[in-house]
Image (cartoon, rainbow, N blue to C red):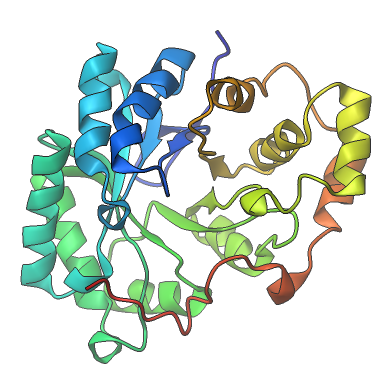
Length: 282
């Protein structure tokens, strides 16, 4: 079994660089998918309250028989619960659904700068509480832009451990990544293969043919070598295993540059812009 590299976060904790994501996996399929991922060798599971499958992630962890201490579990705050008291209740419910007394990482899912009178700072201060209580070992944010992070830095004393943002070859999001690098914030990449849009790219296909890997494996390797934390998702057993099989080859500097050049800027986004996204579930 391959050894997944770990990255050290700014709070001193060590996070597996490759994980398994459960976004858009139906609840009835999540426990089985989580167990399969853990049996394959993944030790990092990324879920969220808004994915509606935390309970099943917890079941999959228990079904795997693997020690809780060996598994990194991330979940995220629902957009509807940014106010401190709501966040406290939501966090309690996440722990209950997961069947855990703590998570390894808890994130603000979206900054929602046009909601809550633009106040995501009090939400962040509430996450700091969770960390101080030991119920969230590490805390971070998701989809935060540099100006959002700047505000947290000015108004609080705790720097997020990670920023989970959209990153893939068609949207390298280098401004946000550079901010993180300069301020000790690790980048986690969601939509790492652009929901499949990059898989037929001729540049990536040429590299894949040369190294004897799939285009998905090449893109995931690109993320690893750029120091992104990445968590592909699939419910297909062969793909779950293929996505894990990315540590027996390396891309050259020229390969990395070729993928970097595929960036389309804002035109490459597959998801919403965090500056304007304001969705709150019913």
